[in-house]
Length: 108
Image 1: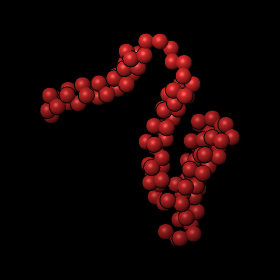
Image 2 (image 1 turned 90 degrees about the vertical axis):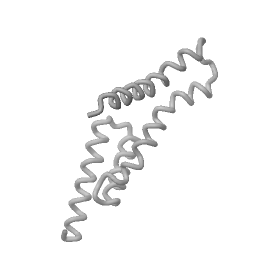
Image 3 (image 1 turned 120 degrees about the horizontal axis):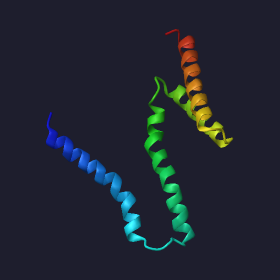
Image 4 (image 1 turned 120 degrees about the vertical axis):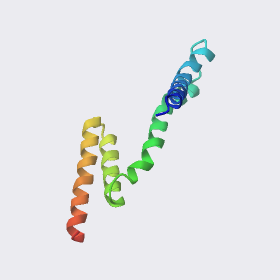
């Protein structure tokens, strides 16, 4: 193992995670009053999380149909204000049942 490379990677990851948290504190000395900027900053974490996870949702199962079924169930449960555990279990259960149905219909 190359310990120098590992330490450099850890340093880079620390800077990448620390800078976005430290810069707003250093740049903005007073409270942000602009409603547009406040709402923009409030929704950035959700947009980033969605952008990181959405493509992977479609390719995480053995079949695109089961992935879409799980996605639809997750969106519907989230829309009706169900908890995170209910959404995750509902989507996972839907994917499992859809995969079983596909295997039963195709005979594989």
